[in-house]
Amino acid sequence: MTEYLLIALALLGVLILGGIGLVVPRLRRRPEPRLPRTEVDTRAEEELAGPPVQAPEADLSTGVLVEPPPVIEAPAPTVEVPEPTAGRLVRLRSRLARSQNVFGQGLLGLLSRDRLDEDVWEEIEDNLITADVGIDATREIVDRLRERTRVLGTRSAAELRALLAAELVNALDPGLDRSLRTAPKEGVPAVLLVVGINGAGKTTTCGKIARVLIADGRSVLLGAADTFRAAAADQLETWAGRVGAETVRGPEGADPASVAFDAVRRGIDTGVDTVLVDTAGRLQNKVGLMDELGKVKRVVEKHGPIDETLLVLDATTGQNGLEQARVFTEVVNVTGVVLTKLDGTAKGGIVIAVQRKLGIPVKLVGLGEGPDDLAPFDAAQFVDALLGTEAPGPTA
Image 1 (cartoon, rainbow, N blue to C red):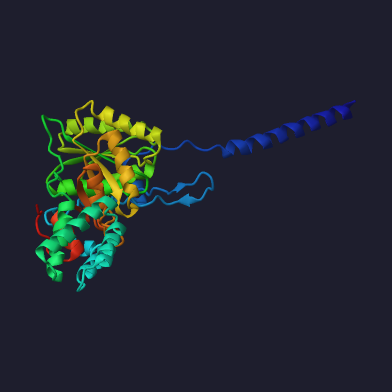
Image 2 (cartoon, rainbow, N blue to C red; image 1 turned 45 degrees about the vertical axis):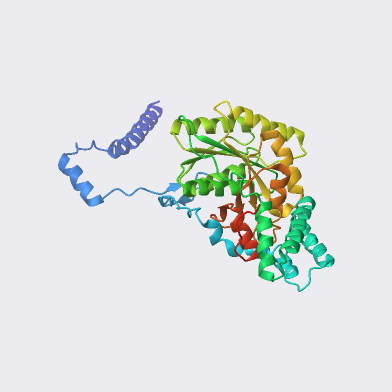
């Protein structure tokens, strides 16, 4: 019995000693409380560490550190000063003279022949018709030339050339009013509506017209009412930015009439001289699109009458341009024609045909792809460039 008691006491002692061995190391590893930091310690650590360095941000998808891109300030856009329009047609004479291959050189070569018989006069008629002068106008011009050469007894090439120039100038009706009505009236800017078919280069021409107006001292606001093509509004905005003009545009697919209305209202609020509204290109035989163009005109006229409706015609389309002009005139009352692409392959006789058939003056002509290659039209200078000779004034 005594032996069992001793064993139990021995085991109890071992358990007590083991428990003490487990507790004491833990008490020794307990951290001592930190002493309070002083202001001197804080300043010393900051001086040793130096300025803080901001770590680059990490791409959350890959975990790779990405350096932020450098911030580069965009340069301010440079505002261009368009060339003055006075004398611009003369400066572009060489480009217009390229059309002499049919209209000028061919006719002058025929008129320079020693004998002007029936065959020669028929060839002259063919050349004028080929140059898109039109059948009726061609017959009148040739008949007058034949009569005057018979009565006057004219035979020299120089005299015949002068007679031809005079007849062409008369056919262009130099008495037509070719000025652009761009002056504001009673606090309302002048409104110019630009129309035309698809592919005539209308938006580019609209930008060039803005340069013509600014070159003549007008302040201009452009309305991007071609809402079917976002690129058209972007293109117009680029043209406007070059000359420091404002552009009013709407979202793609917006109502063109609404955008045109807002453009004129903005022009009234800002006090500009002229609002130039670019419309969507459309085919003249699409009734729905032409009706929509008529709506644009009616909505804009809530601010006041439209001062000019300019039809952009591609000179290379020939006689088809007459049908375009006729339909557009019926819908929006075209007051003037802008004839583009007259440099190179164009047939200059279309100017005569348009004015004869419709009584609409050609007011501007495009003679190249440069930003200032749009010039006010002058009948005498035009004929002078085509024939390579000084064109006389109109005859009785």
